[in-house]
Image (cartoon, rainbow, N blue to C red; front, side, top):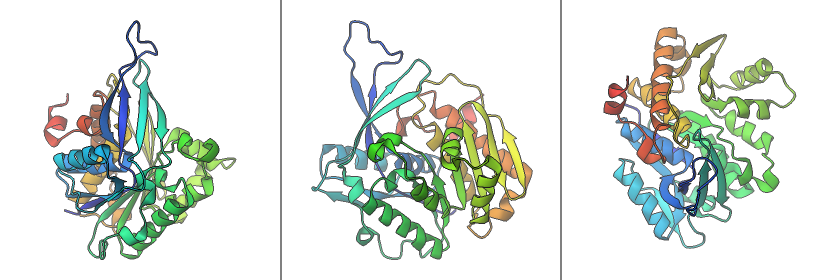
Length: 323
C-alpha cells in the first residue's frame, strides 16, 4: 500500500454555533476543531487505513499542541511536523448557514504554517513511492509559494504521484485576489487534480472549459475531478469524461466534504499501488474509475452530515454502514 504525505496548513477551525444567521438571545460562540485542508486529507486517509504523514509547521502554542495531538489521535504520523515561536498557529472562524455552507474569517497571515522552508524537509522523503497531496493555501505569499512549488518539483523528480486540490480561499490572498498564474503552476505539477465548479470557472478566465482542461491534461495531469456540491461529479481523463452522482444527504457542515472525497479517492489509489506512471492506465478502466469515484462521493457525503473536520471523516466501518 502506497503511503500518503500531505503538505501545507494545519489550523484550528473555530466553528460557530450559528446555523441560520441568527442566535436569538444567545451570543454566538465558537468551538475549536482541528482542521486545515491538507491535514484533513491526511486524517481522511489515515481513518481509511492508509499510512499517512503530515508535513508542515505549527506554532509552539496551545493550538499547535492541540493540532499535533489530534492528528496523532487519528492515526497520522506527526514526527515531521515542525514547531516555531516566530508565529502563532493559524485560526479560521467558521460561520454556517442553514444548509451547512460556510463563511471563513482567517487569522492568517501571520501564521506558523507560512514559515515552512525547504530546510525543514526531511532528507530522502521522496526516495520511496508515495502520494503527495498539496493545496493552494500554501501559495498565498511569495516565500511559502516558493517552498511549495520546490517541494512539488522534488516530489515529481522522485516519481511521487502528486495530488492537488485547488481549494481556493480568496480571503487568504493579498487584497482577496488569487494569483491565477501561481495556482496554475501548482496545478500543472499534479497527476490528479481536484477542482470545484466555481474554482474551474475562476481559473479558466476567458478560456472555454474544454480548452483549459485540455491544457492541464497536456501538462501531464492524468485525471481531473470536478465537484459541484450535490450535483454529479465530472471526471476527465485523456479523451473521455464520466459523470457520477453523489448520495443524497442533509448537510450539517460542509467543512470537510471535499477533503473527505479526496482522501477517499487517494486511499483507493494507494490500495491499488497506483503510481504516477500507472495512473493513466488505471483511469482507462471505466468501471473501476466509476466505482472509485462513487466511494469517494460516499466519503464526502458522510463528512458533511457531521460538524467539524477530523471528527467528521469516515472510517471503513462508517462507509459500510451507510445506506
